[in-house]
Image (cartoon, rainbow, N blue to C red; front, side, top):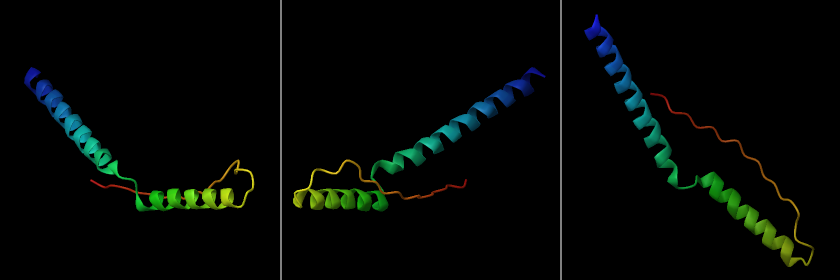
Length: 74
């Protein structure tokens, strides 16, 4: 009975280690911003600069919204 319990514990530890490694590698790949985020940042800078050129006071608030979904199946 002790041998079975030990095997189950080791199997569970191995499973948790594998899941944590896969999760870490999935997050590590996101070091560069997505093209959508880059486009939004460029647009924000463009609009902010355009509004400043007009001589108006600096904008108090500018907002854009994008919903991007990504999924991974294992």
